[in-house]
Length: 162
Image (cartoon, rainbow, N blue to C red; front, side, top):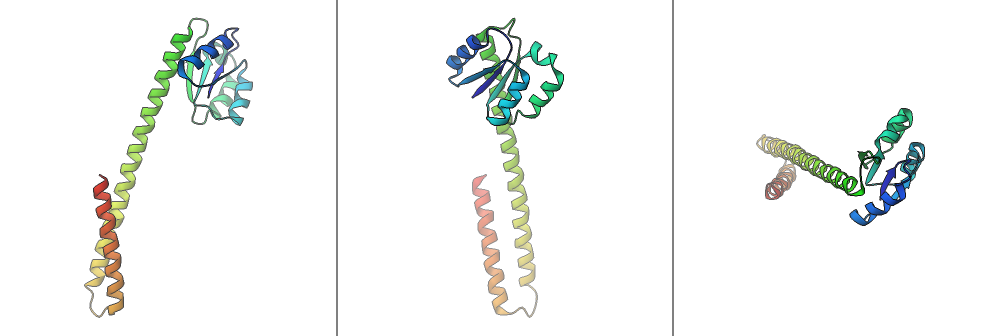
């Protein structure tokens, strides 16, 4: 769902054109304060804001931006932009957002793999060092061998994922 924030008399026309162009429902509202209220109660994929209108009410704009959540903010000037241009701006902003999220996900995955790999290496080294210690009870060696095997299996799985 997309939220269109504008006081323009063209808001319904623009909302309908956007719905047809992007295949997503569009809700239009005429004030920044109402938009903030709508953001509190609904989840939106994007919020299209009529730039001159939202800039006129700075305090309300701050509240709106604080409640965006995961919605992509798109600033347009409805006085000079037609529905096709707004659609292009919306698609471009949403594509950039998807690409940024994918980059962040890949970086987080890589970081997590690295941290797990380091932990597994530490477990393997620690268990191997302990097993070399003299006078360890046989049942302790069996348990350490199991831990070592589990850590080796985890390492193998991590390497196969890369």
